[in-house]
Image (cartoon, rainbow, N blue to C red; front, side, top):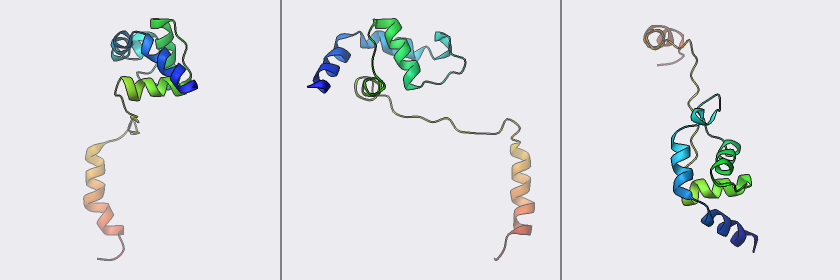
Length: 100
């Protein structure tokens, strides 16, 4: 029964308005980083529709109704230097690698 109620609530609000709001990005909604979390999406859904959803309902909205999937940002060091990495792989790694 609970799932049916949540499904009805999710079905009743304006999904395309929510999609458009989310596609503008998190920073457009005042968040510091341009990454979406379930909590942030829930805040935007509530701002757009006036409907407050649980994290589970937000997840069902994103994956079921909007067709979005879990994405995790790649973690790269700010100081990463590709040329230095290539040099290390070409010259240092063979020198310290054990075996053939």
